Length: 117
Figure 1: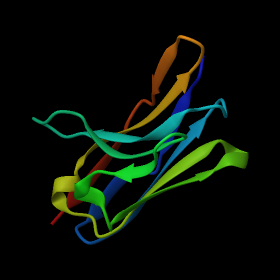
Figure 2 (figure 1 turned 30 degrees about the horizontal axis):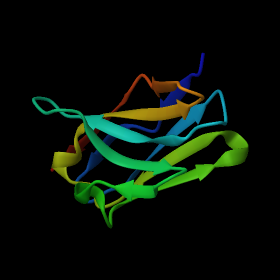
Figure 3 (figure 1 turned 120 degrees about the vertical axis):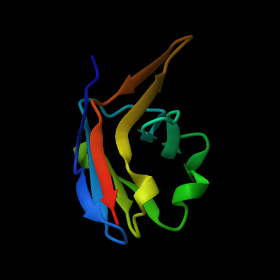
Figure 4 (figure 1 turned 90 degrees about the vertical axis):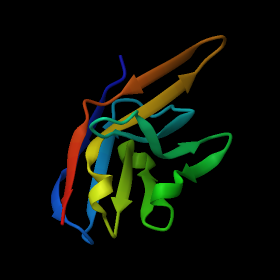
């Protein structure tokens, strides 16, 4: 069973920065990234890196968020700069493994990000 462990959430004033980390118990993923869920909203993609499509970002985070990885540590990072109050949400790490005729999706437990004005 693959496990994803997130860290790095917290509270920050608008305009500030946070870096989220997601450590995986395995190293073979077809895609890995972050989603978020804000109160009263649907879960949305934040950023994802795929072996097929490369890295893409939601429009809301372009120019402010950066997805990176440390393959030796099986860890992905989400650097979030110039944070806005609307970035407040629970952020979930996500990973997908595609095998022969199978697709497995994994989620972390979520980490709260609160941006206050």
